[in-house]
Image (cartoon, rainbow, N blue to C red):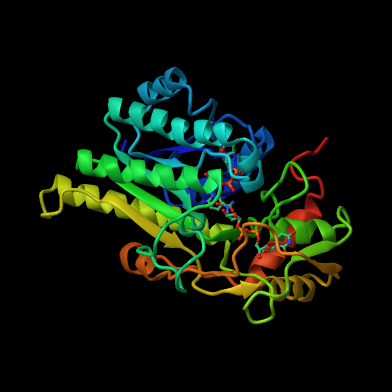
Length: 353
Ligand code: NAD
Ligand code: WQD
């Protein structure tokens, strides 16, 4: 079936939002997730939002036998591969876990895909592969370098995908490099649900706003930026989700053209694409936008810079617009509003008991 997609990690933050966008775009989805950083409740809520049950398989991408059963039971057009661990600090403490999960897991998935002759994949990469950027905005040909095992695991998978494209031109491999995903579904039913004290800025701000945390520590106010605080390219998760639909539509179009012999081009090959807004926002600007939009005061203090942080990071989003016809639509105010709706309606995330 041409529109059937396997979504690994589809119970997670970005995956759950993407499942909704895929369904709305007419794709049929099967979610495969080991629930190591997510819950069944997210799947239940996505099912309610789309008005029909989601086909969900609890399984690990490192488990080849389990994956084979899934590929034997369905004929997929391709895979959107979100499954992975993503905490930078944890990756420094547990590098083997990160390489095993993110790199070995991806190799196992690719091996099973090859065995079943399914060769279309959209991989969740990250702006982290650019390390400390040489110039801004960051385009896809910028130098790549990483300083932590999480980033290395993403970069290593990108190298593997590129090598695969060289080895066999029937693979179509898109690596979407996300900048800083924030926000939640406008229904307030699904959103980001960190297990512990959040590492990332937006969930930290929203937990301060809801009274779970006392105050925000802003890591450094002496960066060479507009107000001394770090600058990032925050992108609404529902825009990001649409970016995946656009990437799949692009693959579909290219594969159809090739099948019809209408193009000289053999395959998409390895195609890295930034998903960002192209606009930088500082930490202080985000805090003040959140306060303004939600009416909540966010107490904060300045502390030392966080190890490994960079001053500024924002995307050139031109390639996504040119190739995929996609661009981010939602504003920082939308990101704050939707984060707050999710956080205030679900102060304990998916832990509803
Ligand atoms: P998330 O943790 O919410 O989702 C990842 C999902 O993958 C979870 O549901 C988890 O249970 C599942 N998973 C992890 N290891 C697995 C395994 N071995 N087998 C099966 N399932 C497994 O994270 P997210 O924010 O939705 O991120 C999705 C992807 O995007 C990840 O690969 C992440 O590295 C990447 N990414 C995230 C960000 C971000 O800031 N959120 C930025 C850039 C890239
Ligand atoms: C943003 C800004 C912090 C928390 C991380 C990963 C990256 C990608 C996205 C997966 C920085 C400041 C933060 C806080 C703060 N994930 N900050 N107080 O570091 O840009 O990117 O998530 O691929 O790989 O590294 O995002 O949200 O942690 O930080 O002042 O409590 O907010 O210093 O300037 P980051 P972030």
